[in-house]
Amino acid sequence: MRVLERKNHSHINLMALYEANFEKFVAMIPDGAPGELLLRNAAYSGMVLQMRALERAPYTSTWQVLAHYAGVESGLPCPTFRVRLYHDAKVLEVLFFQGRGRFLGEYPYPNPWMFARDEKRQVNKFFGELLGYCVVNGFRAVAAVQA
Image (cartoon, rainbow, N blue to C red; front, side, top):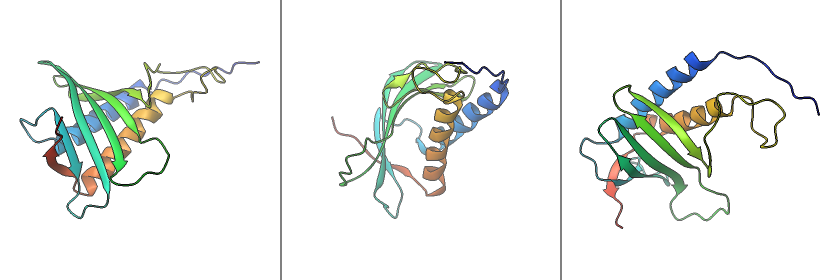
């Protein structure tokens, strides 16, 4: 099997994506928010974003984000992310998506994991699009999740 390699210096674009995701994420979280939140829009379209702080430190925090439709059992897995916010640098990076993580900046193609060449960028872009949908549609914290 021939492995195709291509040099792509899109790290600057990736950093811009990290910065945009950070801005969208913090726009939805109220100051002093508890460690677990439910977010939805005022019209309640059915989609709920569940966020849980896994770790908080002075300069970083790690969150688990789960998007699902309340009361709907589709049989499909809900998008689940683990993200890290770097508060001093004002960037957000997706660490894990659907249980897969530690994404490399680039992958040779084809590869045994069936990742796209720019899997890391695509996962972060998808998370940004989800956040963008939530921001545009007025998602706000409506309740703390009860343990």
